[in-house]
Image 1 (cartoon, rainbow over the protein chains, first blue to last red):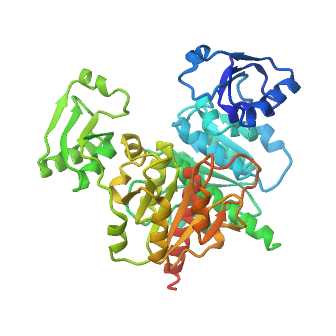
Image 2 (image 1 turned 90 degrees about the vertical axis):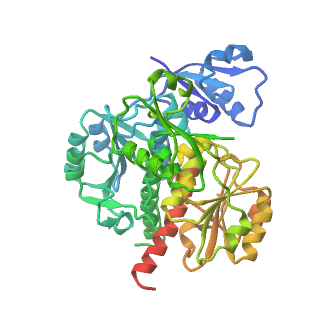
Image 3 (image 1 turned 30 degrees about the horizontal axis):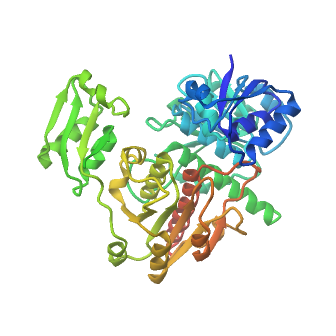
Length: 249
Length: 249
């Protein structure tokens, strides 16, 4: 099975990931080079990957993708095993867990935010959650290639393992008393759990959480989009960690 | 011109907005009521709006919309004039400005976040920015009905007017020295300007800004999705304001 990776940035990012084997790259004849195209061609040459320039008509079959004239056929992203991740050296590891984020755009956005924030992994269940497909790869702007993506059969079991490995579990819950900024994210391994937009985090997972936090709202309106909610928590942790570092604490 | 408003929450939200006249509501025969449907029917009766139950086949023409069996034909949202907004009473007004956010999903998400955060208005230019269409209304989860939406021909002119009315202009700029959390958002009128994902904020607008701020990244990766970036700034302001209120400052 090969994934279709489309768009300039995405194809570039997939090329930078040595774990992804790429069978070919196709480019539209006469494509304008904004700098990214030459970078793509350079990398393809370096890695010995075949590329072809094809006329516009040949791209008709890819019309469902917003491909910007560049498409790569790549092996699916390589998932990391949870054990493998836990065995990696490093301290103060930061993880996002999605429990039922079904919309691929939201899932992709969360992965992108996690990478920008220097997080170490995204853990997600094999059911009731978007898989890592072409849309997720595109929406993540290629970020799926820059972070450990860990797919698990049982999220509940994964959380137990994380807890046994000194991870603190932070769950978002609109009924929580504490606000997300009341937690100290520094000097610990932690995992932030985001639930589905409709139902939130499942009750078994919620019970296992060490902290439950909410995002306070000024207006009693429908909740935030889940990827926006995730980025608010994730960047609160970034801010706290940067501020501690700057002040030499 | 009538807008098609689709989806349970959206149709409910548009019904709550007395400024939107609704010519009819159609529902799919045998639709399951999760509670929202009766609320929709109650409101429709109260407002004297015609509704019809139609067989599944009739919904075929709406297949491009994820309508969940409910569609309303409503007048377009009523924009607020900038002068009208500025003349409204109130202090410490909070505004988001989008300068070239073309993706309707991102634009809708930003509006949704702004409403959750209790912001007063979204200002956007009539060109080079998504208009308020059905996709935006849907992605915003109906939030477009709960905030002043101000469309302007000249963003530059609008910013001058805001400045003359004691608004501070905060622009996001990856080259900025200050971080977004170095600003005090309390006790002032302010507008946060978000630029396009590709090009950021236009240079004329950037020059008019009182503050330029960046979101610090841990990893040198492609930037954040613009709606995620917006929510990080917006909720930093919410946090600061809530913390001041709680401490009685």
